[in-house]
Length: 283
Image (tube, rainbow, N blue to C red; front, side):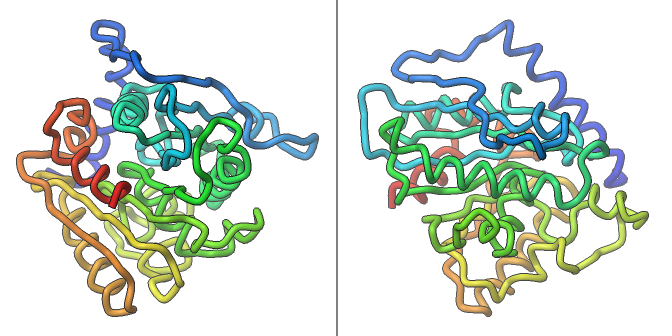
């Protein structure tokens, strides 16, 4: 199947999931939720920036000093939000396991353009680092991760240190990065904004592969055995480059998964994606 067709089908599927959530609402017992916290403020923000710059917290109830994961949703940098089922079930599963989660909205293309969405990730991560202690989380145990476009954003926002540095953070402030089925060359939507075909492999400043010499925390990279064509190969190439540069990294292909099920099955008790994430965070 042609890559762009498969991606379109994936995005359509992601849009459908919130409707399914109405039929099977996840169990929130044992979890404290805090919705719609603004992570940016000021008159200099555009109307669209103000609209998107919010995050939700999913916290293990009655616990303190827990690790925290800043989570970035997928959707090709074009669709989706913190309110989608894909996002919420990650927060719920991790919080039930003793990990706080901050799920963020970021600006989307075409109204947002590169590097708007990356800057939003940095701003939200800095906000969580500064404020999570107020919600009993440990700012010294902070992780950044995401699925698909979110995996790309987690990687590039860390590897290009300028984004976090703009908010008085360093990549080393984070304990680890989790990239699930992320794109490690320049993202297709970034290429589209520049008038470049999706099929063209671009390794420029917008590509995680461009920045592998950056001093960064350990990475966990997961992809599915039935992922988007080429997704496994680009992640393996990224892993080789990172290891060559001396970074700590674990990469794993998950069996019997596709680009959606690798995150949508995370609520299952023995789900491989959840096990890998929890092992990485609670190492």
